[in-house]
Every structure is written in C-alpha cells, then in structure tokens.
Amino acid sequence: MKLDVGMLTHDLTSIPDYARKVEALGFDCLWSSETQHDPFLPLAVAATCTDRIKLGTAIAVAFPRSPMITAHIAWDIQKASNGRLLLGLGSQVKGHNERRFSVKYESPGPKLREIVLALRAIWDCWQNGTKLNFKGQFYRFDLMTPFFNPGPIEHPKIPVMISGVNAYMCRVAGEVCDGLHVHPFNSPKYLRESVHPWVAEGMAKSGRTREDFTYTTATFVVVGDTEQELQKNTQSVKQQIAFYGSTRTYEPVLAAHGWQDLIPHLHRKSVEGDWKGMADLITDEMVDTYAVTGTYDTIGRKIAERYAGLLDRTALYQPYQPGLGDPRLSRLVREFNG
Image (tube, rainbow, N blue to C red):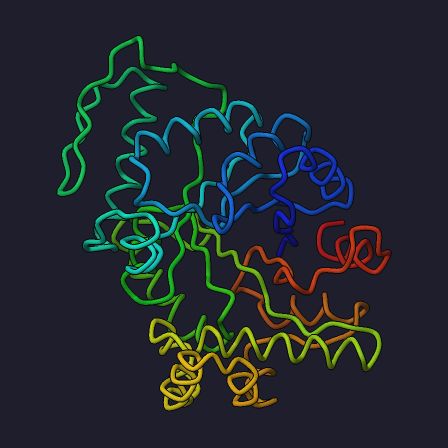
C-alpha cells in the first residue's frame, strides 16, 4: 500500500514549493480535488516542478466538462509530467450539478461510463491516427481535423479512475476503469462484503483481474501522541462521520453495521444546523469502525493491517495531516513508501 497526500494549497504561486516538499518527503501521489478551485490547474503547475511524484484528481467533476475538454487537459498534463497523471472523475450529486454547475443530471452511472469510453476513443485518435467515430447515448464525437489534433505523446496510457459508493458505480469502475476512488467514509467490512464484490462483477465483464485494478482513498484517522491531540481529532472524525451519515447516499455504509436508523436523526439535525448535536450522535464504536486510531508511531502499521488486500493507496484525510516539517510525518511516509 502506498501513502499519498492531498493538495492542501490551491494558490498557484505556492504550489511549486508545496509540490517539491511533498515529493521530497516521499509521498507517492499528490491528489487535487474539485472543491473551491479547479482541480487541474494545480497539477499542471506541479507537473513542471516535480520529477517523480504521481499527480491525480480526486476527483474532477465529470459532467460540467465535455469529454473533449477533459481529454485535452489530461493529455497536456500527462505530457508535461512524463506520464505521471492519474485521472480521477466523479459524478457529484444532483443538486451540485444542476444548481452549482447548471448542467443536466441524467443517468449518472451510464453517462460516466460513456465518458470513460469517449476519452479512450479520443486519445486513441490522437495517439494512433484512428478515425474518431464515437457515438453513444449521451455524447457524439466524430470530427477531428489535424488543426485540432494535438498528436501523439510518449506516455499515452492515462489511468482513469472514478469515484463510487454504491453498486452501479463500482461495477462501472470494474468494467471500464483502471481504479476506484473509494469514499473516505468506509469500513473494512463494507469494502470486503460490498465494494470488492461489485467491482469484481464489473471486472468479470471485461475479463480483467484484481491485479489490473487500483483501490485508493483517504482514511479517517484519529492520530496523536498526546491525549489532547487524540480528543481533538476524535471530535473532528465524529463530525465527518455525522456529515456523511446525514446523506442518504451513504446509507449502505451505515447499514453494513446496522446503523441505518441513525440517518434521519442526523439529517434532521443537519437541516437545523445543529452540527455539534450531529457529532454527539456518533458513538466511540462508530469511530472505531470508520476510522483508525493510534500514535504517529503506530498509525501506519494499523492502517496497513486494517486495509491489507482492500486498498492499494491511501492518504490521511486532510484535516488531520501535521505540518510538512513535522518529523513524525516523515517517519510515517518512510514506513509506507521507503
């Protein structure tokens, strides 16, 4: 299992320094998310000032961008980074698509599957001169003149991953993708009994095996060397569990442990804005189920043991990462990647 890191700065002027530091620390991949900023621009900057660390989106929202736009951006970053891009895409939820991005939200699973296939068709055209003739239910791409064709690159195989929680997306990932972005709100039981079997069904359709596939996520951790650190991080993790648990999308993650009846109570408190009350509903047993607790000397081993065979990459869920100059972090990275 490799230890990755999130892009904790999206200020394009500070990214070169940040990217060099996390590469020097030994992290295996630097992930950029689409939250308050565009996810691709930071990776484009990082690609030109690093040499080894992989660069990924975790995730870029798929539907607001034409697959042709995404294909161009990914192609350029892949070329600039000498083949280090991991393209992660996600559907986001209906409200954000329609009300934040103002795009139509329809059949998210089949549409995301089609985007992955369209990207591969476009890249094949650019790399191999194959005639572009992609016709799907949602997209049509059959015009590519030399003026708009960027041409071949040295590392044309760009791994494509999608995010997924429930059965359909996991099956799509297994069938047509190179990996799955597992949601941080997970448990080994849910991964073992639900996510992996769903992905395996998809892989069986395309004749692939577990070795052809990468599972990645960020792990909830309660980490600290003092009681004060542990208490503070426990409360933060409870808040995160409550936040995700208040959304019906994540019901299967709670239902795997018989806690689905908690969802309406969490949802009601979220509507009321009672964030502390939400966190108070999360028990210590739930923290132990969805998070890993330990000191900086033990947390690496505990994560590795907990997710052995279930994950290939993980990162510390962002709020709980110590400063890059903290020697405890350096030891943890070496434990995973050294």
